[in-house]
Image (cartoon, helix red, strand yellow):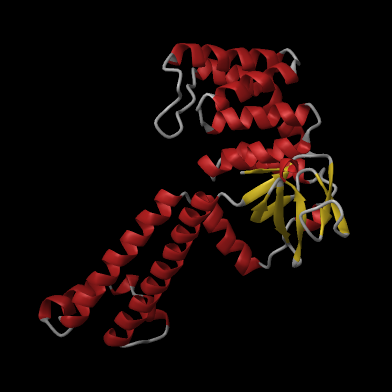
Length: 289
C-alpha cells in the first residue's frame, strides 16, 4: 500500500518537480537532429503540462515525438512510462521504465514504479525468483552502470598489481613495517594467517572481484550492442513453434512480460522466457529495451 501511495504521489507531483528544476533532457549519440534545444525544452514542459491535466495520450505523443527526434534521457522515459501506466498500457510502461533504468540503474522512483506495475501484470510467473546470493550479485550488476563497473575493474587491476609488487618485496623492512602499521585492514587477521598467506588471500579476493566486475562490464557492453532484451507491448500475444501462423500454438503471454530476442525472420522474432520456454512471435508485438 505504501508503494501504491508513493506511486500515485510521484505521478501527480513529477511534472511540477521537473518544471521547477528546469531539467533539460539529454541527447542520444551525436544529439537530436533538431538543434533547437529551447523548442525541445518547451515540448518537454508541454508534455508535463498535458500529463498534469490528465491528458495522458497527449503527453505520450509529445514525449514520444522527442524520443523520435533523438532525445534520450531518463526523466523523459520515466515520464513516458508514467503516462502509459496512467493510460492503462502496462507493457509500454514497463518498457519505458526499463529504458530509464538502462540510463540510470539506481533511480529509486523508477524502480518503485516498475515494481508496482510488475505487481499488476498477468504473467508474474516470468519474473525471475532468485536466492539471496544470486539476488545480491544481480543487484550489483543491475545497479552499477557500465562506466562504474569499468572503473572498478581498473581499480581491482591496479590493486592486484600493487599486491604483486608488495609480494616481490615482502621481506624488505619497508614492507614489513607497512604491514604492521596497516595490519588492522588485513583480511587474514581473522584467521591467524602469516604475512605471506595474508597477501595471497588478499590477491585472491581482489582477483575474484576483478573477474566479477570484468564479466559484468563485458555483459553490459555486449547487451548494449545486441539490444536483445525486449518487452511484450500487446495486451496478449500467441507464441508459435515456428515463424508462421500455421505453426503450432504453444502458449500465450501478456503485456509487460520481459523476453530475450534470439533471432529475427521476416516479421517474426524468436524469444526466450524463464523456465526454458521459447517460441516465435510477430515482431511488432514486442519492443527492444
